[in-house]
Length: 86
Image 1 (tube, rainbow, N blue to C red):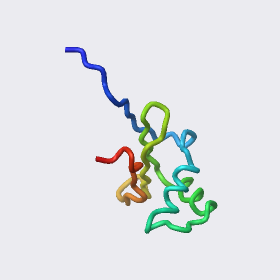
Image 2 (cartoon, helix red, strand yellow):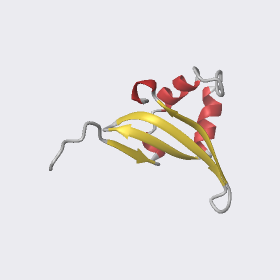
Image 3 (cartoon, rainbow, N blue to C red):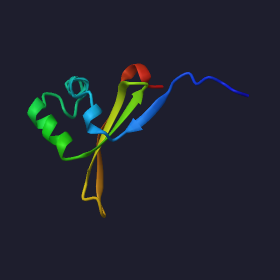
Image 4 (cartoon, rainbow, N blue to C red):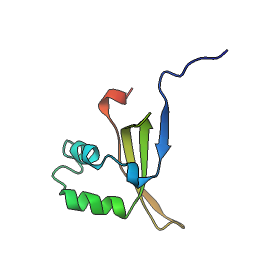
């Protein structure tokens, strides 16, 4: 049976594809990062391993990991846009 996928999601770690404005806008509505300055947010991105979730070419989710790349990692700032939850 050959079924068409309703959604075509994929995960990327390519920071050049990040929609930083969308992520920063989302953070402004969160309890954990409300009022975070854009410069601070951008520095956090530069110094983290980031995972983005896309539907086709539209970013719909984000998470970042603070890690030493050997023994320790901390998952932070995980979200999926509300219209994609459920």
